[in-house]
Amino acid sequence: MSNDEDEVARLLVRLINISNRLGRYAAHATGERTSPATWRALSVLQEKGPLRLGVLAENCRVRQPTMTAIVDSLLSSGYVLRRPDPDDGRAQLHELTAAGEAALEDWRSRVGTALVPLFDDLTGDERTLLSDSVRLLDDRLRRGEA
Image 1 (cartoon, rainbow, N blue to C red):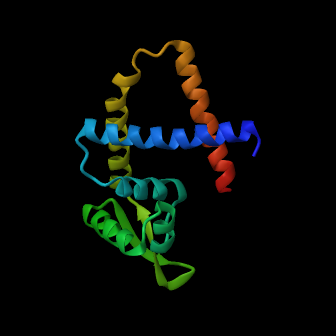
Image 2: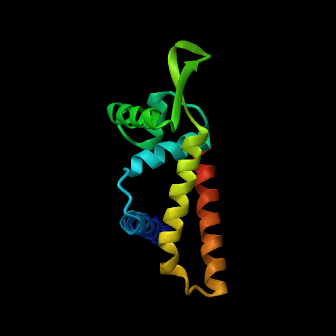
């Protein structure tokens, strides 16, 4: 790797660490007790639509037994519904419900509100930089996931 590539690699690893810290800070600040994997499952279903359990587990980076427990909890909360897969009658798809969508949006709002005090003194230029950085990261990840 070139020096530039090394620097980008170091920055990206640092970004992952900072992102994890930010998530822990938000969970503590909101008093959130629901596991991050639960919110990740709802987010994946919102983004990708109905999925089989194994695919959902893979997307959330958890083992299938863990995802089974998460989905069972989401089913009992009314946040997810299970229906037959039209392509394979033996399989089932898991789909986000309106209640699940509302819970996810409420969680995102609470997280955002909890994080605002850390960033409420950003200048206009810093907000633009943050916005541009988020857009760049999102674009690169979408390209990599395609």
